[in-house]
Amino acid sequence: MGATGAVGTVMLQILSQRADVWGEIRLVASPRSAGRKLAVRGEEVEVVALTEEALDGVDVAMFDVPDEVAEQWAPVAAARGAVVVDNSGAFRMDPEVPLVVPEVNPHAVRMRSRGIVANPNCTTLSMIVTLGALHAEFGLRELVVSSYQAVSGAGHAGVRTLREQLALVAGTELGTSPGDVRRAVGDNTGPFPEPVALNVVPWAGSLREDGWSSEEMKVRDETRKILGLPALPVAVTCVRVPVVTAHSLTVHARFEGEVTVDEAREILATAPGVVLFDDPAAGEFPTPADVVGTDPTWVGRVRRALDDPTALELFVCGDNLRKGAALNSAQIAELVAAGS
Ligand code: 2RA
Figure 1 (cartoon, rainbow, N blue to C red):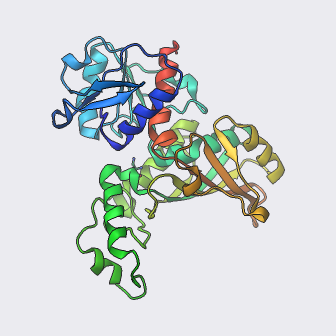
Figure 2: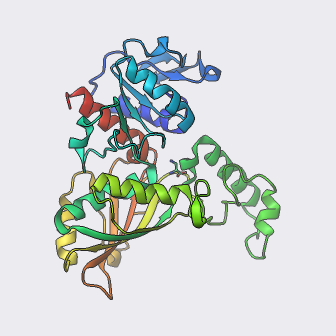
């Protein structure tokens, strides 16, 4: 469901690249996109509109649709016998719906009494595999993170907006006086509250209580649920940056006892789904421009906190459309298909 969206498009590539455990793959989208033909597993498949009949005979339904569509249709799909893997925010905090990251809490996939398994938000997913590996060894006690989120997190509209704004500012002297970028891009801020070209925007999502954004609340709540730490202190600031794809985060993680960088590096070097890329003396650390299009979470800048021997500082970077969305959904679906 949502085959033509930004995540759906990547999902078709991922389903075409991974071991093919699927029989029929049915592509479903809004009536507006019905009739389009899209390639998956080397075949052209016609997109059909989302109806009850489109769900007939489906074993696993991967949803990447807005919250309100998932809220309405995921229970319909589950009632017709499908296990739903949902990438919306509609069910993530439902106690009867597991929130699963296969490298971190694969066992949770079985606890799906509603027939729905939730896929975390891309910002949480971009750091949680790294954090899960460190938590398993050291016992996480507190987290402070800032995100540097790519515009594709806001879908095709986000990417279009950045490209249009870049075209308006490229080759100019803009960015040197207050408001000059804003005047150049006009009202064309798309899904973002401020210009994103030549800028950073300390906002993602919608307004929640006391000035927090929905995105910040998701990172906190989802991290707690996935790691099974319901009282974990988490402080988050989410920021949008002029990057097309791949979210990055700075992470300050405090653990139960003293930690060393050597131990942390050993854990990260062997953790499934993580690549340690950390040699600042050689200019080596992950950046979105290098990790985009890849599957792992990349981690670098591993340091022990200067003022706290129980804390580590990290920089993590991952493709928000792959591990941050479609790949994690596909991995969950594969666990279900394998009998979990
Ligand atoms: C964003 N995390 O980057 C959101 C999308 N799920 O906007």
